[in-house]
Length: 99
Image (cartoon, rainbow, N blue to C red):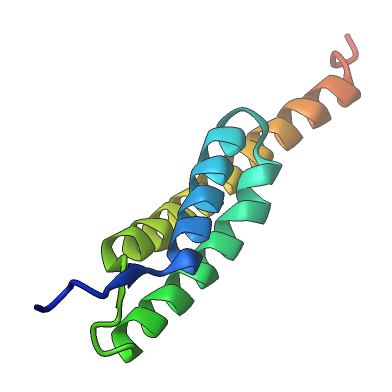
């Protein structure tokens, strides 16, 4: 019976958790998305390669693909939010313009 002995790839689950954490924490803070996003991206790609090479012994390709995509999104969101925080910080430091 095909699929009876399949087990899910643990790397895919960890990558998905990191991607979701990077996205959730990256929205208000920025930097966690920049840290967790690339890690989730590479872990997701590695999990996809392991699943494809396992000849059906491993499952979880959808989870690994979601981690890969969320890793890209978390990185992009983290970069944009970090840039916004940096601009706000620089505006605050510069103070009001002289009159």
